[in-house]
Structure formats: C-alpha cells, structure tokens
Image (cartoon, rainbow, N blue to C red):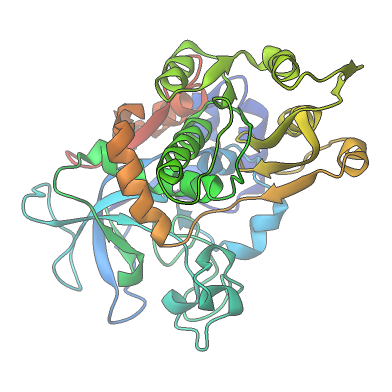
Length: 399
C-alpha cells in the first residue's frame, strides 16, 4: 500500500523550514515527507479493525510538522516513522487482513476519533482524565501496548489517513450518516475540535482571530451553541454578533454566512474599541471583549488577543502554538486568563455531525488531491487563504 510518511530527518526538517514560506511545494518535496510503499500496519490487538480512507484532510498541525515548525514538546509523544493524517473518513474492512479495493459500495463508513487514549492502549485502570471522559487529556499517550503517539496520524503503529490503509480501535469509530457526503464527513473531526472550543464560551461578547478552517469552524460552533442554548431554560447570550478577523474574500464570505461581523485583522482593535466604548493607550485597549478565541497560535495573534480582551477576560488558544515570544505584562496587569484548548471528548463528535449538517460545512472542502500529488496538495493547503480555499484533502476513492 501507499503511505505519506515522515521520519526524524533533521537535515530535511531544516530544509523544509527554510523553504516553507518561499516555495511550499518545494518544501514538501525536499522535506521529511516521503511517499512509500509498504505492508499495511499490523493489528495491535484482536479487536482492532482495518480501514481504507476515502478522504483525509490536511490540518494546520500536519503543515507545522511537514514544514518543521512543530514544537519540541511533541518529540516524546510521537513515534517514527509515522503516516500523517488524522482528519479521516474511511471504510471499515470486513475482516482482520487485507485492504479493500476501489469499490466502496456497501461498506461501513466511519470517521476516526484519533486520540490514542488509555482504553485504546489497553491500560487498566485508566488515568484520571480518561475516567471522566476527558480523553484529550489522557496521561498515557506514550505507554501501553501501542507505541507513543498522541493521535492516529502521529504513531508509527496505527498508520494515518494519508495512505491506502490504517488500523483503528472500535472506540475510535463514529458512523457517518447515510445522507452525508464524504466531503461533509471529513469535516467532522475538525468540527469536533471547534465544538470543544465553543463549550468554553461563557456568554457575552466574542472575538475570533483567524478565519482559516479552525477559525471558521470555531465561529460556527459558537454561533450554533448560542442558538441552541438560547432556546433552552438556561439562556447563553452571545451579546452582539461575534467578531472575526479575516484576511481573504472566501473566508469573509463564509464568516458572514455564519452571522459574524467581519473585519480585516488590522481593523480588529478599532472595531472592538467602538463596541466596548474602550479608550486606547498606545496599542492597548482599556476594555475589550470578554473572550477571544485565537485560532492562529502565533506570537502576533496571541499579542493581538491580549490587546483586545477585557480586564478579567479570557483568551482561548484553539490554534496550535509552538515556540512564541509574547509580552505577558498585560495579562498579569489585567488579570486575563490564557487557556489552552485541545481536541475533544467523544460526545463532541455527535454535536459535530449535527453542526456539519446544519451549516453545510462540507462546502469548505475546496480541493482534493491524489497521494502522489502531495507536494501540490501541501502547497495548496499552505496558501489556502490567498488562493480562495479553506480545506484541502487527499482523495483515495479512485487511486
């Protein structure tokens, strides 16, 4: 079978990092990713099943890995060589061996919950986080009978979605409704991340920084949750419509369709100031919005979030930061909370299915590529915004 693998090759990681901003396609070819042919992964246990991907999305964390920008934190919770891809819609193979062919008719279609938590690793008793359902906080992602890997797509034994086949535990499988297209289904996993972020919304005014896939899905989840709770006995008010900072026309169109007030990134502070009747001292607002969802995770975006959040407010890091340099004086002075947001609980996938259906989020899939076109696909994903795209995916339906 074919698989897009990444190995620990320091020189190629450095070359990819150097080329990423100038020539993304060249960076993909010259970097640590390689299209290989190998045997399918072994089943880690008798209950595990084989999957054949239909579509697999390209995530920001995948790009950070491909371009050598992922932080050193991940070194201890991945195992090499691993096959990338954790946004997966796939068919279940009916049997412990073999890979299905190109005919997907009649197969069980599933989305993968990629977190490799205690129960999947055969660890008993499970850790305290897993015991409460917080599998995203599992304390055992480097232990058990599966090699280190915080998720499928970052573990050498499970394989990943950027391939013709991988293995999964039954606890990782979510059935895709028959009325959903594959394009809808491949958006379920990233939408579950957004659902997790939206559950942190405490009510009141919201600003979202970044209008790529993560930002737009977080916006949809916040709007959807506000609408749902507003019809229940415990009302959750959004206050005024959420603000989102978006750079590119396609992003702005999606954001407006979701009911947001849209502005250019350099206009965000001015818009927040006009809404909150804040004064401005230098670059710092005296007031601001109660919650900012940073869906970029860069030094600049975190600094901007701290600039516009109200005293006593919260900045939620939804985008994956790495090594950043930020002045945290204002966070201390204004008693602002900085909160991380990673992955999901299983029930977030049920909410994600409904959110994808409600907002037709499969429309965000802008282009698909074959595995052997990986350099072009990665380049497109790296420059999605300016090219009028949102989500790019690999298509294994017609190899």
